[in-house]
View (cartoon, rainbow, N blue to C red):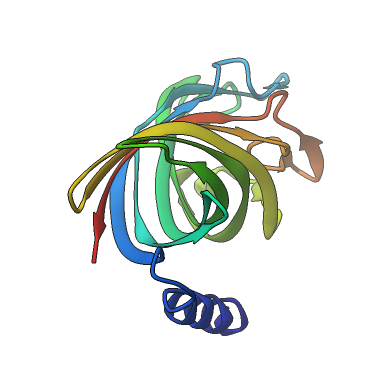
Length: 209
C-alpha cells in the first residue's frame, strides 16, 4: 500500500509548482450506486441471494489541477466507502426458511485522472479512473460456505460538469466501470458472478487551498 501512496503524494505536492495556473485542493461528497436487484444470480435449492438496496456512499480526498495549453489535467486521490444491502433467503436453516437483509461495506481508493475544459466559471471534464480495493466488512461472511472475492485493481471512467465560485467548486459526475461489481461470490466453491457493471452518480464539494 505504501508503494502507491508515496509516489502519488509526491506527484500531488510537486506538480502544484509546475506553473502559475496550478492549484491544489481537498474534496468530499456523496455518491449513489446503480446496482439492480437482479445484478447477481445466486439461486439454488438451499440459498437465494439478491441485491436489496445500493446505499449512498461517501468520499473524501485531494486533487491537483495543472493548467496546460488552455485546458487542465486533474489527478485525484480519493477514499471511497459504500455499502450494499442483500436479501438472503436460506431454505436450509435449522429453524426453517430465513428471509433477512444483510449489509456489506466496501472501501476503495479511487484515482481519477481528468482532462478539464474550463472556459469560465463552468467546466467540463472526463477521464479514466482506477479503483484500488482496500477492504470489506460483510455480514455475508457469516453464511456457511459463502465467500466474496474482489480484484485488487479495477478501472472505469468519469465524465461530468462543475462550477467554480471563488475557492469553492461543485462537481457532478457520472462513473462507469469496465469490471463487474464484486468480481464473484462463491458458495461451497461454486462461483456466482454479478451480471452487470455498476455505475455511480457522484456529487462533490472541492475547496481550493
